[in-house]
Image (cartoon, rainbow, N blue to C red; front, top):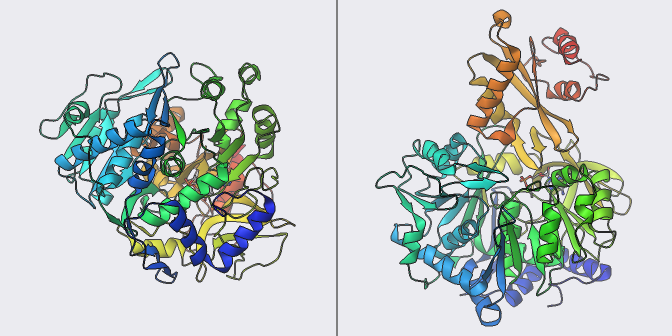
Length: 635
Ligand code: PRX
């Protein structure tokens, strides 16, 4: 077990050095000791970033659910695998043991099989944070179907785009969801989406809110009656190491969402290893990640990473402010949570509320606090450290991406001395590089540049579903022989990394990765809009918010601007979802453009953040006078 659970700083450096000097033997040792294989690999790693092609544990055979469930049954059958904490604190929590999880996953797997789902088929999952969501992922994995979870806040158009892109045969959804004191009719949203998806043959519906919904004859079925008659035995499909496990869509700076494809063995090994080390999880502890399973954080660190370690993982259906702002702290006290993992945007929102909400709860069970999704600002870091961790629980600021599958840069708690706003040091096996604009690596410390990774790690996405060329162009073309993250970073005097933010047109709003191009495409669908440009600007709680510069077709049209703004946001909600709504909309007469017609977003970003200094040389613009006009309008 020596290199599986790093215990002190010296050991970290030893393990790290070993992982970099000889990555193959490093990962091989971990894979050998800690997992259940049907057949061992022929080769640990083959890779070529110029193609790009990466294969880990080639030739090995396994099923990830045997690692996440079956192998725990003998020793941890009665241990709680999943604690389900419902939206309403008055409803009882559910404690799902490993043996119950096994039964429920197998039953659903048998239902999927009976509905004609086979290895390699894609299944779209659009569910709230209820146990069936985790169970659906695992049931797909049990039979080798590829799950594609779509976050249950996305609109019907967004669902349809994702379903059609990966040609899902089935959708698993529910009659609705609870969100604080609201209910949301998910099935209606699914129906509108699936109407545009000829590939969908069946829709399985979980009953959650007892809503009256439409069931389409021959396509839709309630799930429970099918589960009631299904067998609880289901032989796991034997998967090859590089067989796909799931697709998860993420925004790009341009074009449609990218279906990142993750494969089986490498993803399992890396998420399990990082879960254990980044959270220092120990048997009998309770771990809670407040993300939604609709995002990569939930895939890797609510479902696969924790369960591969036989951990107890908490799923929370609700929101931080229902019934009031003490809900998170109440959950921590109630379930004696030891590791708590959340996003800076939640921390900032919670920090704005009275401290009473925190102080009336006993948080002494906490040992590790995690942060993910966006840079954590100093103020939020200190609030989290002082009031939640009481200065005794290290904060791990974990940097990673949908594409990376697992945490790449993070302190190891009680091992790596933390520093506010710094993700600190790479996890074992991760070789970061900072690059300058000419494509050269910047060596040494106290430098900043574009963050790349020079060597493959097991859980990296292998391609973009159906578009390998785009995978190559997006991640492997900016810098020779390196994976480009799209983020900027600096390395301080001791070699700690601080992520400074995106260097492309992706904006991180409340920890959600939003490409500006698809939002612009949505706005431009509005009949009154001629053209638009969206940029991010700093926001107290969300980290960044979206600012839209919009040119109307008829300037003197006399339409009520407030109404138009609402309609534009409504259009965005319909095409993407409410998370992509604009905080500010400014109607403008033109957009600053280069002579080749490219919008100068750099200038718009400055105007949006009310920084009117130093626009740089604008004389080469096609329309330099427009800058002043936009600026006047922004005041
Ligand atoms: O810009 C970085 C930011 O989130 C991006 C990845 O977003 P997504 O694929 O949705 O995955 C989020 C959850 C893993 C990154 O390119 N980001 C993520 N974590 C951090 C971060 N920025 C700064 N610090 C972090 N800890």
